[in-house]
Length: 435
Image 1 (tube, rainbow, N blue to C red):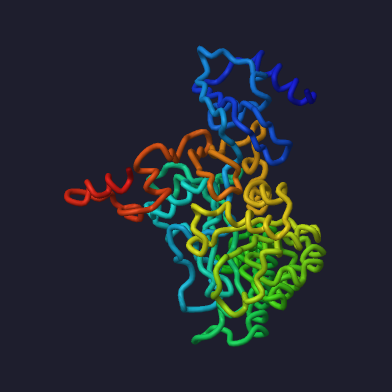
Image 2 (image 1 turned 30 degrees about the vertical axis):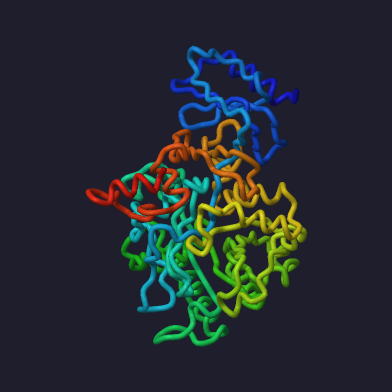
């Protein structure tokens, strides 16, 4: 037995256990950041993972610990989608192409049925984005899929108590055309460059003013947000497809020294070495049906393997509705079908995705001290015959396939997409559909 596990077992045995401690027993554990445990136990309390180990090695008092028999089942970290549109698209409007001051948090409908689909698919953490019709359509929001009455209840807060999120940017054809919007790729890049130069001047004026409010520039939410990007406290999540558009993003990131995650990267396989040299992680989309936009015509299932082989950190995303969140695990599975190794495929929807949101210290793997975000499966994660049986966020079960309501969310049918529960004459039909 490895030394860390021995130390962990001693700690569990000698320390008093928190209240509401649960032992998930006898599961095939997939920690992601360490080797699988074919027959393992996981101890959870107060929203955190207390310990994991081989079955029977976590010595606890059954009178004080609730034991859940998971024999024949699989437990892995909750899935993380780095690019979702669940709850609403409402970022920038048509008044201008660059609107970093807008916040998607102000436009999310927490009752959107998409949130139920997400937990039914095993998702526990999302990066919710505004759309890609602008060079910058606004600020993204990182959320945990806790049971919630308001979106505020799902915020992930930083060390200062502020909601975490990035900045959505885009290039290519999406933000082109229309009054006030660029008509060419060159003009698009020039507008972005000028916006960051303006933000540099804004920060310089703030620094020169120090603590003198009379000398400080008038507060500008647009420049303030771009300033956060320049200062490294807000990551750019950049929609980009064609290889030339990808290179434009990398040039701008190098020029202004900001952190960027490249999203979609349909042509990423063409410039894998350049992406790797820039140190830019990639959040990939794969679709298994023809059509879509012309600039994504060279999208390949092999993109994940090619980028990973070049040394790029990769994740997959849903872009929900483009990929229904209930079928998220099919994306890395298709990457595996094209040659991606299993370890990277598992990491691509867990720990790699967490790192793109600066959350790898909290979630994305089954490790002591991390949030108890995990899912229970009835088979291998990459089998189309496998079902998500349960989803836990910070130790609380938020999806239970054995209940009629959650089964309906997982499988669809009459009433599955309704924000409000059907009533009166429709109620009996909803119950029939869920059985």
